[in-house]
Length: 304
View (cartoon, rainbow, N blue to C red):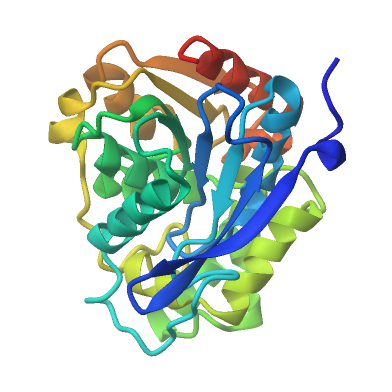
């Protein structure tokens, strides 16, 4: 019988990183003998809140689940004054390495990255870290050009008046206009999270991004389909064969990370398993929570 999540021990703390601090939380015991799972949120520039449900894996199988807010986001040091040159994959890879060492798990751990977090996980995995025993890529692109092309294809399926509103404000540079935000939400409700209204943990992340969108704006751009930030030409496709860790890929049937977007992981990562959630878009961990958590737990247990 699974333990209720509320009954699982939880520790919250801050990690010194460069001149800043990174918030993290451990759910479950690090000394259980099972692979501790590090969970990285997406964005870049989201917070841990919307992927909070993965802590339920600690109750399912007794492993430690570690969430953290990446630098610039959530409970971690905010740096609204930093420009695009500061926010790089290298920065977040260094932060991840620092977290693993701080927790003393660098020799044996699993990693789950959602969306941008999976891109970060792939960047981490191609370096072949000896301690990475299992990798979960959740709803992530391997090439931002494919991502944008597919996002725009999905956008063309939106009601015509919604498309017209989006285009009008993009051309006028008025993408903070409430009308633009309302039109964008039609896309998000179809392809990002199909649970309406959005659950509190999802809503908290979007509220935090509304309050401070420094990282997202610099690395991605204003919306999921208007990608003009520093990551716009990012790709890892050619490096994917370097990944040695056993890999699980998950995505949703209605996901903005369409089959074309995630296919390079299936094709180029040796032995990659792919699970497609039939009733989900970009957040199976929210939209089909029990099945998603059980799927991840089952995969990880093979490598404990």
